[in-house]
Structures are given as C-alpha cells and as structure tokens.
Length: 351
Image 1 (cartoon, one colour):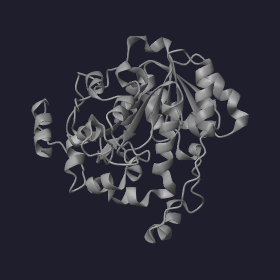
Image 2 (tube, helix red, strand yellow; image 1 turned 90 degrees about the horizontal axis):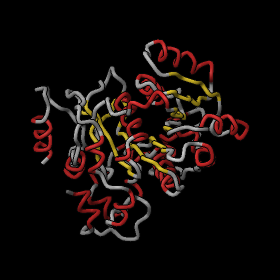
Image 3 (cartoon, rainbow, N blue to C red; image 1 turned 120 degrees about the vertical axis):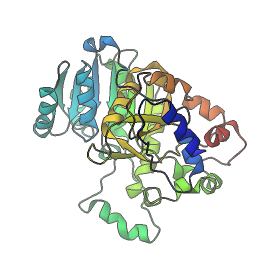
C-alpha cells in the first residue's frame, strides 16, 4: 500500500525522478497515513496583502526560525524577529535582508523566559497579524546543562528517562500579550515535532503501532522533550486563540536533504526527513491560511519532486480539526483511559 501511494504521487508529478521517504521498516500504518491526502504544496500560498502585514517570529535566530524570517521577507512581510542575542542575530539576519527584494526585518532583543523583557515582547506583538513560535525548548523549561544530550546516555541505557520539569510561563505570557494587543484575527503557528504523542498513547495503541514507537528518538526521549512539547501544544489548544500546530519529522538542511515537495499527514505516525526551508513554508502557510486553523499535522519533504502549484490549501482542507479528531475517538496521546481500535478516529489513523 505504501508503493501504491508513492506511485500515485509519481503519476501526478511532472518529473520522473524517484521519491524517497525514510520510514520505519515495519511501519505500514505510518506509510499509509504519511501519504493520506498529501497533495503537494507550493511556495506561492501567501496573499498579496503581505506588505501591509506584520508577523512576529519567536526564536528568529534559530536554525528553523531564520528560514521562516527569510521566507516571510521574500513574500513582502514586515517581520518582527524576537532574539536573545541581537548582535549575533544581526549577522545572520543581515544576510537574509541582503538577498531580499521586499519586506523588512525589525530585530527585537528579548528573552522569552525573562519577565524584564515582557514589554518588548508585548510591543512586538502589537497589531501583529500572526506569529510563528519557533523558539527552542529552553523556552519551555528544558535546560540540558553543560553535557547536553550526552547526559542522557547512562540513564537511557538503564531504561530511565528523567521526568521533565516543564515551564510554560514564557509561552503563556506570549499568548496573553497576543490576545491583548495583536489583531483580532491573530493566528499562532507553533513548531513542535513529530512523535510527540507516541509515548502518551495507550499501551495497546503503542503495541499496535510499535514500528513508529520502537525507534531511538522516541524511546530515548531526551530530557522528556517529546512530553514537554505535547503538553505545550495542549496549552495552545486550550488558550482561546486561533492556532495551527506543525510537527515536522527529522529536520535537515539543504546539503543533506534538499528542499522539494512537502507532504502533510495526521495521526502522528509519519517518519522521514524535512528540509528546514520547506518547514518554514508550511509554518507560514499555517499562520496565514484559514484551511489550517485549529489543526495539528505532521509534515515531511519528499525529495525529487518540486512543490506543486496547487498550494497548501486543498491539502490542509482535507485534514481534520483537533476538535473533530477528539470527537472521533482518536487517542491523541493525552492519557487515554482505553484504546478503541474500532473508533472512527483510530480507523482514520489506520486508513
């Protein structure tokens, strides 16, 4: 069934190059859902009114955040780039502006986790059309320490993963400010990660989809990052604002996984690689297209195929809203008491 989906995509493409998607060797469910409704996306999905709009990017100096800024500026947006280190960020963002034909960047020096910078963040959000949350996990309370991920090695080998100590103060302060001073139709596009729900699934579902659960990054779950991001998503969903949540698979840069055709999926079973430029394009679409509102979805980059001129809207329109998925009985990794494999939600994942 995976090859059938691949062939369908090849038939719809104007190129004869082979598509490549890395996937778990036994993950039939992952492959099926990974291609569900995965119409190709285009880079030309932003409205012509971009020049009169401002979008805030939190974590603008990060590896993905800077790509978001780059793409927004190319489309004529005024970008308010929130960064911790203005001098360091200026070097990177100056290069972005040097290649830009339109748009502009305003650097906002502020640490999302510091109360002293609250006014600067509030000022950045004033009158904003949307924001992209691409901040690193430090903003959610995860502080790896001097040894970084190496500190996880011994506990992981013993099957022990430290319980994360999440702190969502920075996120909630950001959302509060947006509700008070941004435009009434403000939208938040949040960057998290694929696989965030898998360890939260009921144990029966984990066994059913073991090929996407029994992989290193999920089992290791460094510093509880998957759990923290899953909880952060739920904070956004329940905050009373317009949102869309984007969960890319493994992030890669141009030299190892070039930009190509992004595809969308739901069910949190997608595996593979995603180019950061493609992730930036999808985040921008998530922040601006009505078809993305109230939806959480995964994305990957299929190499060898260019983006299709149909754009993201038709594909996003096929996806279910988070409320619909809850109503359908899908186990969304939030601590399901039981797993009903016959529910409409789980049938949707397996289809």
